Image (cartoon, rainbow, N blue to C red):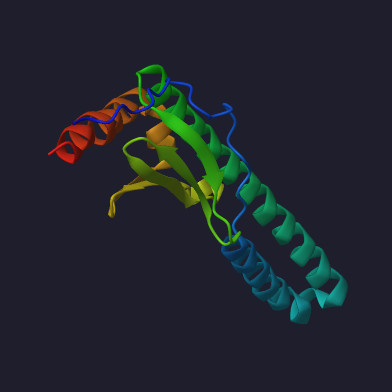
Length: 167
């Protein structure tokens, strides 16, 4: 006896948007490094120069993190949109609940896929994890090769993963 299962559409419950996901750890590192670098200016330029250096370095770090988060969010959106267009059932995309990571969980019919990485522009990295296996790539390389990466991950997650789950 077979049970009928509800068929899933390619759009499922995904609204088409990826939520913001800021990383508290990166912000902590930015504040500490800005403080250390600014403290080196205090003996040579006085307290006003130290405060100015702290504010300048902190602003640069925050801007770098915001730009890195936007880059990872664009990559996540690109991957999910391509998977959905290719026929993968994407149920939704949620961000990390604790706010300590720049990562999203993509809920699919093949299981949850975690996409995230280091969200700091000069060293931004994209990481994708599915069923305990992960891979990481430089974010700028991922942007340049997004079609190939999306195709490879779609095949691994939705085609190979679906055939191995059916056994």
